[in-house]
Length: 145
Length: 145
Length: 145
Length: 145
Image 1: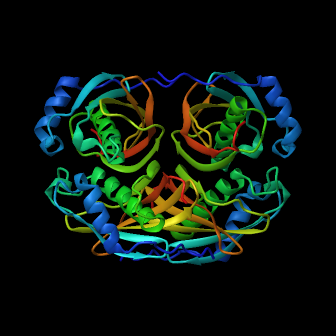
Image 2 (image 1 turned 30 degrees about the horizontal axis):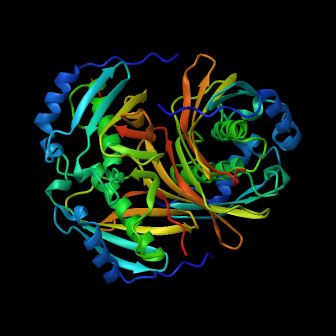
Image 3 (image 1 turned 180 degrees about the vertical axis):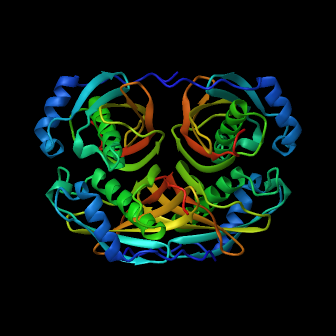
């Protein structure tokens, strides 16, 4: 079986770096937290608030795309280092269930960590562990040393 | 060739309805405008501002997903009526080029307007008509009368 | 966590049904075999032969799409009964590695078994358990009793 | 607007090359024909026969994936030269309507012809010009001179 790559930074180092460099991601408060980090994966938690809901009180589509993208972005940085330069080249997401307000957990798994392209799988679950959305996201990354 | 469905509301009626019902979409100002509406398609313009940029000054991925989703949402409402209940079931987007600050134009074409599912194609272009992103989004819609 | 649906037929019943009804799928010999079947999943094995290779001796893209589609088709029938009427509405597959000749294993997991739509995830691995391709496939199914 | 790349070979040169190098693609007879070729696009015609149908007499999913993949493969070769080395890295297809037996026309448009990656859009239509399937396919290509 494929050996999973090891993270090269800790969750704390990554959170610090992102707070510093991506302050605009936190204009609505610090709503994203790294929940777990291990070989080849990272789980990002979103504490949803009213800005994340659509009429009817369920979590909006853009909130879920953004969470998936951010989880993948964090996961890639955790495994290639704090560079902040990867660019989304493709996103595919299927939505299985509406999400009620409350924490959401996006787990990103690195399927292929190539020299130029990273292919990831992301699953978003709610606090009952129900699957809300699942898909794949691909990123181009700067050449590594 | 497939005949395209006719819109059932005008661009003005749709803009009014959305301003009234989806005020949270406009928390950062009125940045979305219907640019064009015709049989089977709608073009939505986004006037990007600083909240839409990522480090490096290019338009962020979440801004582009959100624009594509909103263009499709508007296009469906324009063709099925002002109901506001369609739900994204799947999104696929490929990103071709980085987008600089400035207006972006998302044209959504209805590929299949079924009783329950609507399949759409969305292309996002910049003001030089360069293709920034393209993909397909699918929605489930409430039963129509 | 989401409870997985139970299969409603055995692997043997399903193999017999498919041999009988889909004889054209076996024009190149019986190359597909159910390897495993359980709550919410099915693994289909393909024993590749020369007709499945492209120049260079690796397994062709169409072979992999077909295997993914067939694994999902089998998995759905195993869980809704022997009806043979589900129709692919969407396929998304990312290809991670080239596959050498030899057996391939496609595991389909049912992500959502709705009344009308079934969303599945499929992963294709080789005999070393390396991930070759992964993606999601959606099917519309006939109304169930 | 984006200028479209010019083809570097003729349709005849491409047909000859493919017949010579990919004879296994024609084990069921010469069913694929280049219908049109121009700057940034190629249309491939498939004359379906019984091997392309599924129970019920409609064209099978694998036939449509294969046609889309082949149209993109031809289109890329027409624009980068006769190298035969591009590899599918991702496929996304939505299926809009069932296709009856008869000719199908797959038009592939090159959305981005990069140094390493080519992003394409493919639309499959029947002889009444009805849209059967549409999607995007991405390929990695060998470095060009």
